[in-house]
Length: 402
Image (cartoon, rainbow, N blue to C red; front, side, top):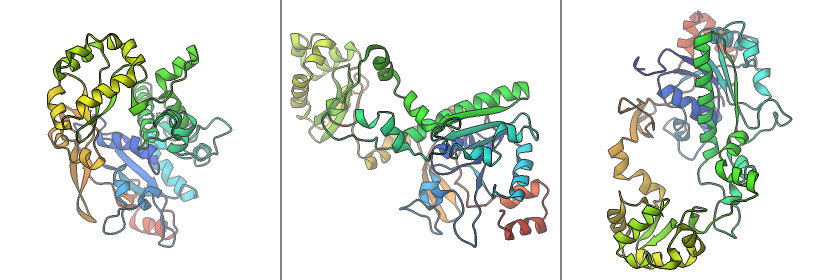
């Protein structure tokens, strides 16, 4: 890893699995941290590893999951059974050489497995212990398992997603996982910065439900202070700004967003529909909101006369506009190549894998990527660094500790 990356020299050990936690620590690894992923060892040659390794439907030549690659670029893998005394000895030796202990386990497990600050401060008082759970570690739901879709349901997302009058809908992606993983790393990095100044670490907690609720943002404040409960809108329209929604072009859908009054003026001018500016029904945003159904029909009639490419060329850079792409079109867009958001990495079980680049740039350049590790790929090297010789490592492996 390049020494010029801002987190080079920091070691993060993470007992993590599946999505939210690994997504967060992957950003740390891309920023240069040495992220050591602790995974359960195979038992009798079966199973083992992060559960994400078994998530289909797409696998590399030797059974490595393509899904796993999405969350674990740039990391190392150490197989370790934290439920054994020998596993705890190894973990504590590793913690003594690290800056962060992270996990995204069920809320009641970090204390049982010695992953809290109280459990490790004796070996390294500057350690930051970061926890990501479903519902938190300090309440009666701490033992509950939980996933993204449940949080979308409970935090109100499903009720405000979709067309009015239709059944509740979740988002098409696991956005609560991604948001929580990102918040997880913000808290972790803040505590790490403080630990570097003071020499004293701490626990940092994030949970899926709290993150999901926090992202309800201004609709939450509208309700809590004014009793105004945001409802679904036709065509995913903005609740107050108009026109700001999906419209039909001749060959598909597009999203046009006149969030500011000036964009409505520019839209009508560039469309050659100055008559709409003088129409009293659309004189102000409040008028347009009151007459949104009529305005939608008028704009549909106009937009359906030409394909999306025409409107993109006419409006782009003047009025906020975007095509509503299928996922394939979105990934194959030439613009992703222009901005460098697609990358390719080598993998021992596959000649190359196409991956997404980091959305973060340093000095104008995307962060470097390497493939996610094979299960236990770095176990021997890490244990060797901790002082275990070949015979000791072989004994640990035969005993199922690693």
